[in-house]
Image 1 (cartoon, helix red, strand yellow):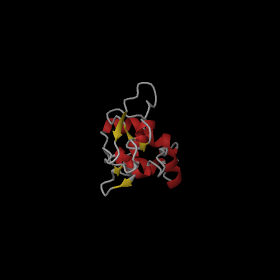
Image 2 (tube, helix red, strand yellow):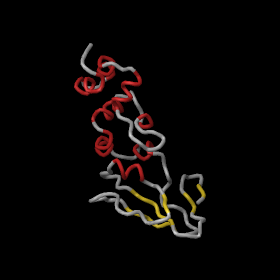
Image 3 (cartoon, one colour):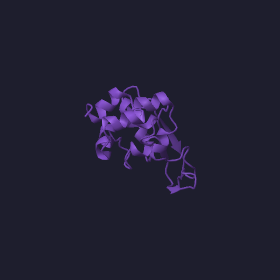
Image 4 (cartoon, one colour):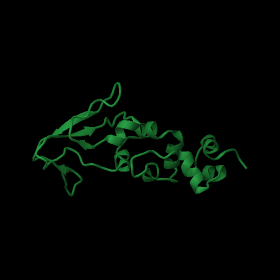
Length: 146
């Protein structure tokens, strides 16, 4: 497979390939990390009630979607779907501008807990509240007032 300038892949393998497309309406954490990934076999359902699709990429064709970093995929979600995936704490940090989507996911496509980010950056409850994080969430992330 060869990557094009637009992030899509050209199937030059001589065999059929398949691209997983996650439901971006109500994605789960597992499926969203696989969104756009390409494999040699059709993607089976990832869990009960999975809404993902496995799109065919015939030999000599381009993949229907670009393969994107997880943070780029998350940026395309509406607020409710994003909040469902990230949780209240991470959403609060994102909403007030303390973190970006790329801070909330690893290069390997894992989600970074909001509390871990707060601990690593040494943010206090007071700092979080001053930035606009609701006090209850700030306390869950950084502990009670000092």
